[in-house]
Picture 1 (cartoon, rainbow, N blue to C red):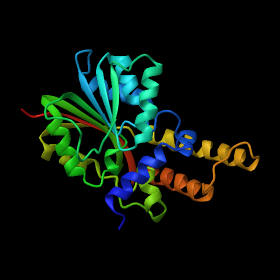
Picture 2 (tube, one colour; picture 1 turned 90 degrees about the vertical axis):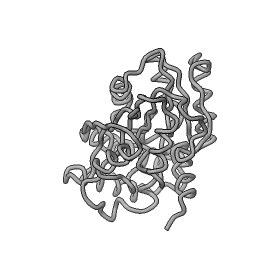
Picture 3 (cartoon, helix red, strand yellow; picture 1 turned 135 degrees about the vertical axis):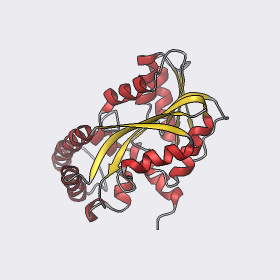
Length: 262
């Protein structure tokens, strides 16, 4: 069994690499910024809100939230390289006084209790080895009545072999949970929870990845792109298996959000 810290480090390294940017673009989750906006609206974000973006990556979500809702945002990510890239992006956009980033672990958030009005965690909760601890940490750092919102992959049946293993952790798949499990985890942590299904966003993302994989493979073959160590055969097999799993109802995507009970 892969140690939890190794999984976190591998995921962090993968998402700050060139291949992730080539295949996923600027927003590393299905639905992109429109679903980020949807979560922000569901959580009632405003210029008065103090927001925590957990697993903030290279900062796209945090920066968007600050621009769209006028809120103050703190991004937490396991990768020091991601934190550095995100901070530079915020400075470039003149938002460094409104958006800040720091390195940290979702299961041990580097924040005092009752520090935030809202938390967002996009397409990352399913990769946390100790999800119960992460949910408790969400509740700990929220003010009474604060809200937490997840967007994440959902599991409707056991994953096929093509979607298992460490590569699947990197692709935010291997430990996806049934939708009811996410609801239960947040309920147990003290949240009243609601959900929305967005499987169409996942289909669109997988289709885009398949097209980008083809383009990247051609570019590498023509020596116009250097991606050492990338197994295009395995990546294409995984993308195809993911699409088939979505159509069979084995894999989906949803928003899960709720208010912290007083």
